[in-house]
Image (cartoon, rainbow, N blue to C red; front, side, top):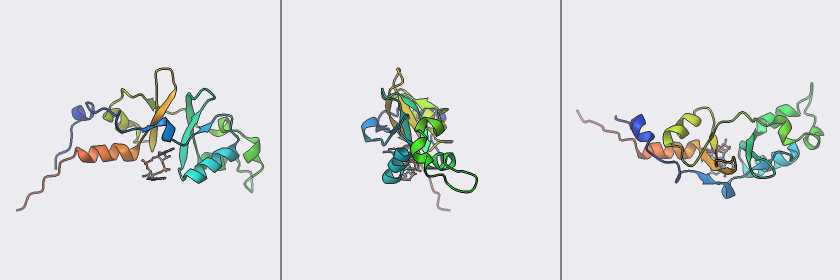
Length: 149
Ligand code: 4BW
C-alpha cells in the first residue's frame, strides 16, 4: 500500500472542501443556553460554532458543556438554561484555519476536533472544514496496490 506524502497534502487547497458559512448551523455568544441546546438538538450536531454580533468567530459550543454547565449537586438545574448564556460555557480556545490553509493543516486540526472553523483575516466566520471532508479527500488520493501471489 502506498499513501500520499506530506508534501502532496501540503499542496492540496481546502477551498473546495469546506462548508460555507451560510450552510453552517451556529449560535451567538449572547444567546441563552436554552436556544443553543435547541439549535444543537434540532440540527442533530453535537457541537456548532459561536459567533459574536458582527459574525466574527469566537468559539464552539456542544451539548456536553451545556449539560455540565447546568449540572447541580444532585440534578440538572433546568432553570439555568434561560439564566446562563453561551459565553458562560463555550470553548474559546479553538484553533482556526483560513481559505489559504492546506489539506495538511486541515488534517492536523481534525485529529483533536471533529471540525475546524475557517475565518478571514479580520476574524469573520467563513465556514467549517469537517473531519468527513478531510477523510474523503485523503481517500481519493490513497492508492492501494494488492498483489496476487
Ligand atoms: O445532519 C447530518 N447530515 C449528515 N450528512 N451527516 C451527519 C449529520 N449529523 C451528523 N452527521 C455525521 C457526519 O459524518 O456524524 C458525524 C459527526 O457529527 P457531529 O460533528 O458529532 O455532530 C459527522 O461528521 P462530519 O461531517 O465530519 O462533521 C463533524 C462535525 O462538524 C459535526 C458537527 O459538530 C460539525 N458540523 C458538520 N456540519 C455542520 C456542522 N455544524 C454546523 N452546521 C453544519 N452544517
